[in-house]
Length: 290
Image 1: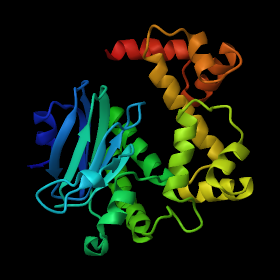
Image 2 (image 1 turned 60 degrees about the horizontal axis):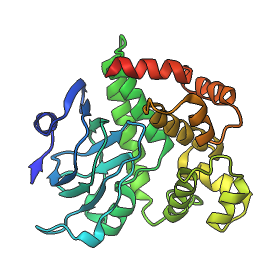
Image 3 (image 1 turned 180 degrees about the vertical axis):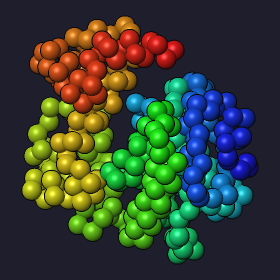
């Protein structure tokens, strides 16, 4: 078992590409090449958020370890945002892992972890679904990549903000992300359906999957994710587009068809509106990073 910090990231093959400490908040941005697999237990000495920024979804499964041995049956799929309480061992395993970029944010958070039982940890900590948290983490990434004149104040302020958001998020407990929101199984079902390629589905299709009305779905989804269902689908679709654009054997037209666009021009317009780059320009940009 190892305590994970900046030095530990480097010792496990991570390349540190940015870091900043401000007040009680420390952020580290790191890249890792592809790996054959992951199977290890680690623990942090402070509250931490891990944010997988890479376009692919997190392939890892994890569990909080109650004793010296990880209980295989407790392993659950991990999301792209994971909250790790201090002094709480977590076991992570995955098969082949693609290259990835990770933001680690260590910060103060005042929350009584003794009242936070194992089931809730698994259900909530390993897959933080909160639009406000995601937006704040993305802003941290921007400050690390392109520091401004007040980056320290920005990072410290975001750390304080995230601490408050997480305290409220975790305090709600139970199986719903927020009161009146969707249950985790409903959010998972939506993700699975979309990632199976149903990008042109109707909202009524998703409502049927969740066993609720379209009106209830739209209201509850926004309460759960702090954004509309349409915005979420667009983001998820764009993430898939970025992943496909990494495959140089696929043409823009093929990718457009995979994402259920009727014409390549429609895909180009939608991608540029969301990312500021055309698909071809994005490919050139990615080549420059390799």
